[in-house]
Length: 101
Image 1 (cartoon, one colour):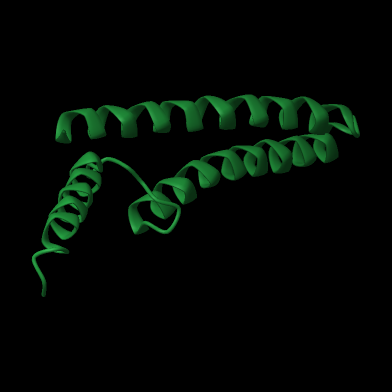
Image 2 (cartoon, one colour):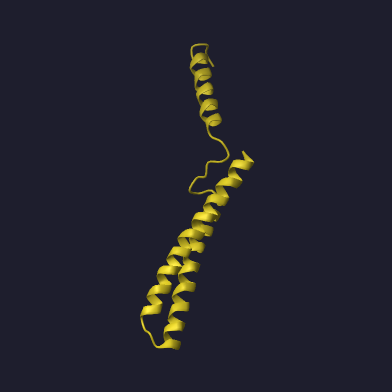
């Protein structure tokens, strides 16, 4: 290696270290197993609440003969519960991240 290239290589090394140091462990890439797990958890919160609300409303409609009103009411309640549950889970995950950093 010639001495002409040494300053350029040292500068490149400094830039690489700078970029590598700027990234911290709390960043989640879309391919990170930790990020995928969190996404799956939040999605499950939403879908489960909608499912429970929908099935509950459908069963109550069949029992009381009020089709489709209780189904609609419980779907909206399930959606609200899903959003609230996902929000709480996301808040908890953020607090865990803050403690680990």
